[in-house]
Every structure is written in structure tokens, then in C-alpha cells.
Length: 500
Image (cartoon, rainbow, N blue to C red):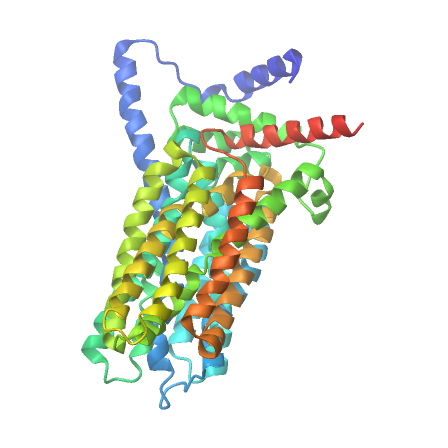
């Protein structure tokens, strides 16, 4: 930026926003600022906790079907076949794919906060619909509507947290949503096991498993009433003073002003593009970013993670466990997912995104290869169920400790501000469509080809994913969102200069 522009922005900031500025000169005032800094962190943590209840709902609603399916499938309940099992499971993911697209666009237009409030209401009413569904058709319809909320949340919450977080803490804060997703899955597995082992003779116990999700939906709606809007979204809509006020609630005074200036600068650089549309994808650096985002999203699903998260009970039953024992075994999968996510959060801002994603993908591929081999070599062995359980735990340690946190974090980091909702909607649409295909086809492939051959397919896809990560995925660790965007713009300029 030219020096004259810098001075103009500085003067504008000083004149129009002077009333929001506070000086700190003395030692006494410095101590006061330390206390204020603590209050900033606590407020930011509260915002993070409330908004990530969307992730908790995502995790619970995708995980609960794991234990509910065996009871839904009974002849006196929904009488599911392998195909309708896949349909009930994957219908949520089909809805999520479209929810990601429309949720991202809606959040760009109405704001992150208002959109999350609307999504919380959809969670509540769709969950009730699933819980009372009298047949497969109504269940599938309600699961699609529920999926709209899941998809919207998966786009909006990471973007909202990325826009709230300081650069050095962004990895930790954004991946809190991933932690809440796996916590929701753990809660689903735990409630499934408790209810099944206590009231397993009640065929309709699956209805109670599903309806529990109404509680976090209410918490999310009430909590978002006290959460502020994203300062970056406010600034992009010309609400400068309001944006600065929000920043001053979650940052130290001088840092809030500096970050506000950086946001304003980024918005001015994007001034030629007033509104995000599909035409923006014609820009080389934007097209490249969207393709990278789609690739990262596909990589997360090509591990085959949701074959385990959705059908873990059937996998463990096939290995030799009873239904009740398989449901208890799934709790181990949930526990390791939560613990691994804690580890992933701790490592993200130390190790870096790219090496974590590569290591996680390599680990999941090896774990699936071993599951396939042992399923053949130790067939009918009494040890096989415990070996399969141990390997699924190993798989989830790599998946939830590395692949998933990096996926959701990078989706929230790599896109320009004015395109963030649209671009994340596109990439997460692709993620959920792949998720939908895995959820729909896994029980069919499992029934036709067996566990080993099905997992060998995922092993081959994992090897392809490793090549993609090595060649195309960038590193974003320790850089502000504006710095990341600027680096891609400069990369585009250098590329175009070479072409000339």
C-alpha cells in the first residue's frame, strides 16, 4: 500500500473512532490492562464454547445412528434393509451438502450470528421429527432437514471462530469445534450403550437415543442470543465502529485498533469485487484456493472415517462382538477421538498444518490396511474382535488427532474474506457429498464384498490423497487471515508475470 493511503487510513481511524480509544501510560494502568486482557480471553472462550455447540450437535446427530440402526432395523420398528440403512444414515449427509452451500451464502448476507440462531431452531424441530418418525420415508425426510442444519453449522462455526480468533490462537480456537464434534459422537456412543444395555428389550429405544439432541439445540439457541457478530463481517458491511467495539471486547486496546486497520486494508484491496458470486471463481488465485479446499475436504472423507463412525457397531459385530458389546466398544472409539483431538489442538500451532495432515493420512491408511489384512488372516479367531477394535482406535487417533482438525481449520483460513462463506460452502458441499456416498455405499459394499476388500478400496484412495497433500496443500501456520490472502494474491501476480 502507498504511504499516502496509509496516512489517510490512519487519520480516518483517529478522527472517526477516537471515542473507542483508551491510552495506557502508567504502571497502574498497565496492571489494569492485564486484568482487561484476562477478561478478553474469558469472553472469547465463552463465545467459542457457545458457538461450538453447533459442532456438538453435528457430532451427536451423526454418531447416534451408529447405535440406533440395529434397533431401527428390527421388523417391528422401521424394518431396514442394507440399502435403507445406508439411506437413513446418508440422507442427513445429503442435506448437509446443500446446507453447507446455502448456509455459507446466508451467513455472508445475514451475518454469522443470526444464521447460527436460525440453524439452532432447525436442529430442534428436525430432531423431534426424527424421534417420532413412523416410517422410513418420514425418517429420511427429517434426516435431510436435520442435515441442512449440520451442513450450515459445519461452514459457519469454523468461519465465525476464525474471524474472532487472534492469529497465534486461531488453530486452537477453530479446532475447538472439531473437539465438540467428537465429544458429541462420544456422548452419542455413551448414551447408546447405556440405553441399549438398560432397556434393550424395548424396540423403540432408538427414539430416546435420537431425542436427546434437543437439549444442546436449546443451549445453542439461547447462548447465541448473547454472542456478538463477527467483527470481520461487520467491517465488510461498512459497520466500522461496531466492528471495532467487538474487537475491543476480545483483544487488548492497541491490538484491536491494529487488527481493525488490517481488516479495513484487506476490504479495500477487495473493493473491486463488491459481492461474492460464482464469477469470482474465474480469478486464478480464487479458483486455485477453491480447488485446494475441495481437495482437502475430499481427503478427510477418503480415509473412510465415517464408515467407522456410522457403522462401527456393524463392523464390530461382524468381527465377533454381540450387539451390546459392540455398542460398549464404540465408546472406546469415542474416547480416543476426544483425546486425540486434544492432542491435535495442542500440536496445530506448533507443528504446522501440512505435516500434520500428511502424517495423519499416512497413519489412517496403514491402520485400514492392517484391518483388511487381519480380517483375512485371523478370520474366525477369538482374538479378531479385539484386534479390530484396537485398530479402529488407532485409525481414529490419526484421523481425529491430525486429519480432521487440519481439514476444518484450513477450510476457515485459506479463503478471502468476501468469499469465505461462498467458498467454504462449495468445499464443504463436496465434503458432505463424499460423506454421503460413503454412508450410502458402505453397507452395500460391506454386504457384497466383505470388510477386507471394502477397506482395501479406502487404502488405495489414501495413497492418492498422500500425493495430493505433498504436491498442493500450503502451510498457513502463524499467519493472519489477511496475510494468507495477500500471499496468494502475490503468488498469482508472479505466475501471471512469468506467463508474459
